[in-house]
Image 1 (cartoon, rainbow, N blue to C red):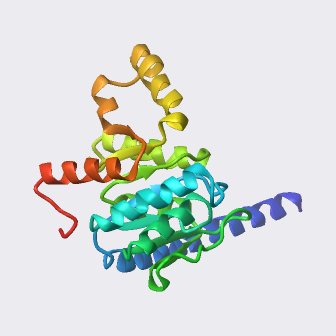
Image 2: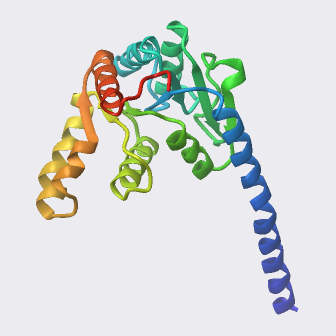
Length: 228
């Protein structure tokens, strides 16, 4: 009897897994159809826990404003904190403001600065990540936690392994990121686990104007502009 119950439970799990494929496909199709309409954008990542008035929240607003004024839209994870600041900056500059929301048990809720027709909801992190990578002309990484590090290192890995084309990856906040950047150079590079050229994939800055200058210089070098 126990063996029969075990097999029945396992078969139910397999059936649920099979049906989940259609939900995953639906998220991909909806994401591709809607994101393909938005034009060139830059993704901004950072902590959901950063509050308005704090240094990096206000810096994220400044960075997003500068990006939007340069002709790029802004994509964030759609939630509070740095994500809210990114959408707010784009909104203040009259630029495109996109939110890719993820269903989480805490922290995540839509912020009010996303364009009403440019808010997408996801159940699966990996589908959401594809949207960030596929539809971004650059990654701007503000101070954040594990989720921010996840996005940062996945992008670096995909570029390093030639799974996607190179695009700018910019860390904002030398006080926050300096220790990590030094560790990458002094520990990982010294140990031979990365190549010296891998360091060129990352830029470290402290202002929105520096972010825009790096992105513009990169795309001018590739004969591209915000209107491509």
